[in-house]
Image (cartoon, rainbow, N blue to C red; front, side, top):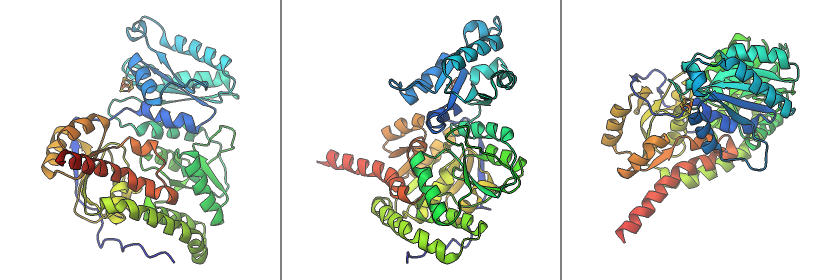
Length: 428
Ligand code: SF4
């Protein structure tokens, strides 16, 4: 049988003092989420109502699709719109009509707000309602904000999923809802583990297509697969669904704890749980151990960016032998991050929000072996001699559940190996 997890710390970090910072922050905007959401939702289209800057951000982050019809685009607000000289609502409506008549494959259309659309106070909720009335039942039109004003890049997915919840049909069925956009291959692994545990009534939000019959109600329990879904969590609770708090399924320990929370809710007996999880747990431990050779004993500093920081700090300290110096997160939602904080041994500074200059000072003075941060900070810190890991890679790479545990650890080991190799070269 797989060896036991190390015991939880006698007191975790749930009640540790939090350094709250409200200064300048360095993050991407929520439009970034469209890059992975459009791949997941195969009959959805994301229409950003924004500027040329927004279009460039999307285009450079997603690359140009040559062979496929794109499932995102930008309705550019021109100067006449920004100056209030044209009726942007009418233009948007014409744009949407053109798009939908050309693309009958679109079943869900998201109007995505941006900084410029918010600055001119373009009412996308009203536009979505009007357009939905016009194009339903074939197309459902929703809206959310991907604006970069006071947000972080993973909030785009949260806002998108939260926008879908109020319109879901009601059900009294007892069901499990997995919440968070996972790559299909990872989602299939999770569904197969749950099926082996005998849990068959499982739905996912977002669903791959609009016509999957996704519904929600008082007998729905939901498990988050991403820690940045605070808005979606609140929207589901408003619909009567109940959250299953658990550590996030990163690494062997997190995956087992997440599955155990679900198994207990659905009355799976302990022997079946062991029979299903024993082999993948052992595989995950072996894969993590390989990368942990590089990570063991190394220190890590997290700038607040993806909101994955707390569960990742738990994984890296408990399964890979790293020492966390600071764990910064844009927001700390105890109902969501609490179970991971319980497992994180006291020691690191836990910070919420950002004041980038003072955090940079703390990072430089700690001189960590590895710094996890956004792209904008990574290059300057590398130039100062620090090894860095881009936080954004963690949402573009499959990292959840047992079969990806080794890849997750390897993502952090790679920059350390590269730096060691560069040092070696320089010494020769
Ligand atoms: S939404 Fe705002 S931050 Fe994002 S690309 Fe557009 S202008 Fe820039």
